[in-house]
Length: 90
Length: 269
Image (cartoon, rainbow over all chains, first blue to last red):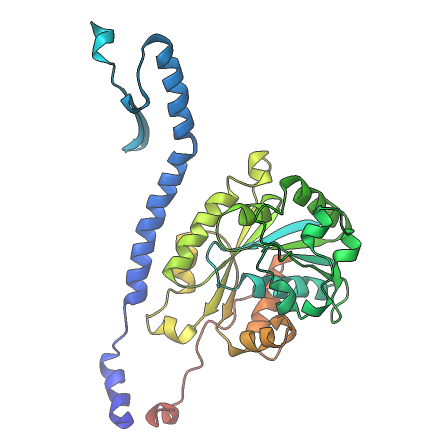
């Protein structure tokens, strides 16, 4: 058996490619998590401070402010959405 | 003023304590005075790996609480000159290490020793953050395996933001990758991430590659830092890593499996 194994591994030298799969998966998740952790650092605090400023003028609740950092080409874009309550507009 | 080196990883069981013991011992072999500190409160193990578990009288928390002096708590290694161990406390109180207390002890050690090696607990909680906070350099121990590599990347993020050097906008902590439990045969068969793969993903300088070796378990079984076993490849690889830590340029060894000869393969040996 071993005798034939020797020639078989010689000819088709079948290698596993699970290491290659692991590397691909890691590159994706690590890149994703790096961008996440950069965001998470200051965003919650920024959101709280903006909320405070907005509240000086309008009575909004916490959920009506959405803040996000996105990527557009080479630029990072800070996206801020404030939903004003209906009464304040009227 | 001595240098503080944290040995950290995020994931548990990758070889932090083994590496702390080996690197500290290696630095002392070069003639430096070294203190190796166990930060794993409640799960003390550095003493076992260093073989001084029966000589522990006082510990890190005793020093912080002023129940003992640093001098009383430090255990002198019997094999290598100028090597001392500060054991962790076995208390179950997670908050036993106070920030001010740790700061004071580390500064004290920094004044007395050339190197202070901090053996971090696993995880990224308080204990691990405390171990890395005062570091000048960090040795990130990683296994060539997906969960270990991902956790190491998380730890690198913390080193860049949650350390004293980061907070004071000082020069950043110098990072080193120590790749442990490396199985060259499995790498060659495509079953294990290679050294190049891991270096590419984590993108920090490589301090060393420690081959998978039965000698590591045998060394910890008998409480001898594996670096003292220069017969085995793991011990030699740790010695190389210490040399690189001190600025020597050394080629990486043990990256190729010993190829079996024709007859050995033919006979399935």
